[in-house]
Length: 183
Length: 183
Image (tube, rainbow over all chains, first blue to last red):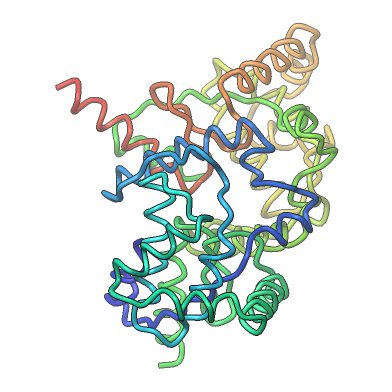
């Protein structure tokens, strides 16, 4: 929710790269979010999100179901790589889940988000559900794992991984410092 | 390493509360640090510490053994509750482990740190190793778990838990905002 304004101020261009957390968690031996498995850390995380949302002025309500299946949303995000509405779609999905407690695993919710963007959902969903796009999401997830990514959001800046909202400014600074080094 | 300067500027008093991570990790089913268990996250963590140490100008060298047993150091820190050198001792232990690659589980290393503070190690170590002090550290660890603490450093500000160096400023702000609310 914060990256576009900060990146724009820093003169950094963003390339969104959707991937799935589920396979990463499975490779750790987890069948759900670690926040569900490790109770104290999970409780802390929800409180942390609540405090940070208030700090940043971002609407937030704890989802009644967590985690929700984000595979369809990720497939749409991946299939819309060349579309100018891609980042707005992604943010609306996060808002639906984390502020409006809507079931983003439900195709009807994704359709309604696409409609709210003025897009025609039918062809987008068909393209998202094509075997080619499904395969691309699997490859994107393998690529993320290969880069050493283990959580989301992760920011890759000049090969350096920065994990989490609280490293966003550091990731953007990394680019600025690289430009300085390069003179 | 950063808390004293920032807390002083914010007019916040610090009470150091030593506790052990080992029993907390054990309760999660981990027999070592999660950074050893989850490889990608561990690799990231070391790089993150390296980058943050450079950012803050804090000396850092990756320990050749991790984690080292900090029970003796924690017992000394607990036993020195009323001593003005307590926070300096604690910081020197972290420096010994994370900048000088010294074995802080070795009593000789703890003794040399106490000597560098101009203290008489014999009676301090004896008091640290007393059954009473050992029991107090177990209770302090249970107290931490009871508060919902699952990692270190954790900052408890007015009942709110903030976890990690990257939440230190938020923890101090929490006090400032509370004072404002209280008028």
